[in-house]
Length: 68
Image (tube, rainbow, N blue to C red; front, side, top):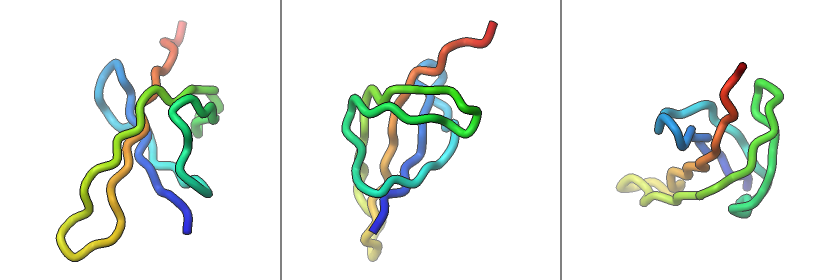
């Protein structure tokens, strides 16, 4: 079973995109966003599942380099 995580921007606290992984990524894992930008996971938060659900919300926090 794969992992679906929300990619979050550490600077703004806003979600960037959702992404699927084959297994739980490590905090130092690097991956490409939909924009093609290479980012490194800084922090991974695993929340509590909703009542009656089995899947827990997962947030991966990354720093996006400013354009310019």
